[in-house]
Length: 120
Image (cartoon, rainbow, N blue to C red; front, top):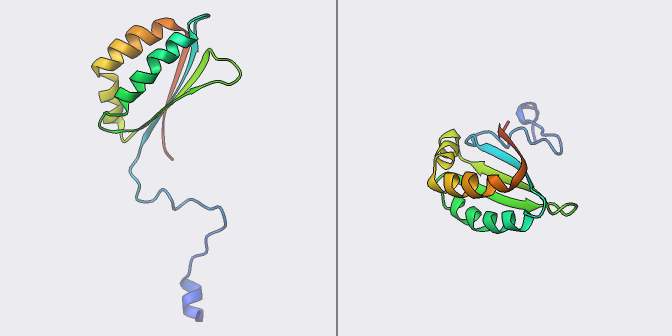
């Protein structure tokens, strides 16, 4: 490599991922933590599984993962990714969100915490 090439070359430090996000579309991530009411954890799990299959078919849904704690089976973590705010809004306005999530799952929860974030 000549002196001019070396002067113009950019070195990227190992592990530097600052350029990975260049050119990517913004996404909306949702992390929901559910705590099932005592004795209702299996019912919550039974409602979440088919609900997730429906949500994954939504336009703009990139990921919808359901996780159940290994330490306490009453605790669930949902990790959702949507292409943009409009996709998240459409999800929250859907019939299945109202009927299943809010109508059947939420009443079986002792606690529900939801964090909505965007990729840096």
